[in-house]
Length: 137
Image 1 (cartoon, rainbow, N blue to C red):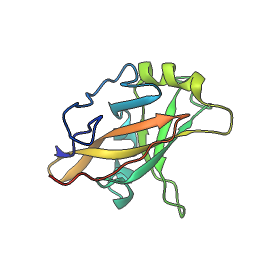
Image 2: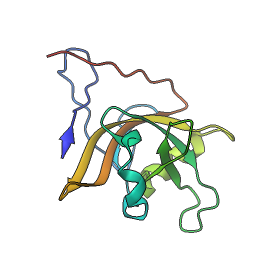
Image 3: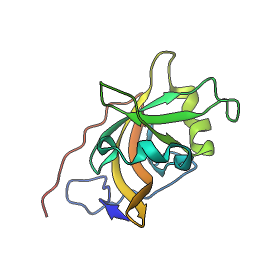
Image 4: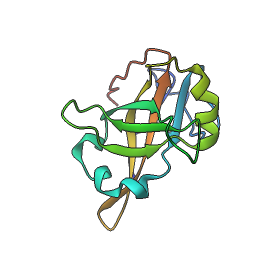
């Protein structure tokens, strides 16, 4: 795995910890994506490299999960799919998303096996503006 660790503060003293069931702060989450194996080809695209911005949209046509939240690229040319937010987290976030709206996120960790990207971890938000900034050590 390679990537960054998120912090609540610019001094990097209050870490944000992965939680696949609920928000880490109001309308803010840090989680691993699920279902990436179904989108293995898309995961290899540079739009999912570290630091890339992603979009989160309800996938209302998903017969497996009525609250499914799809994570896709923010590339304007084509929409690549990375996977989904975990089911428990999606269930708590879906009611916060207004019709026609979505969420945003940033790829902060990538997981690979034998040089092939197999998963992502993102920090994101729904219904709340989020700013990402680099902190020099």
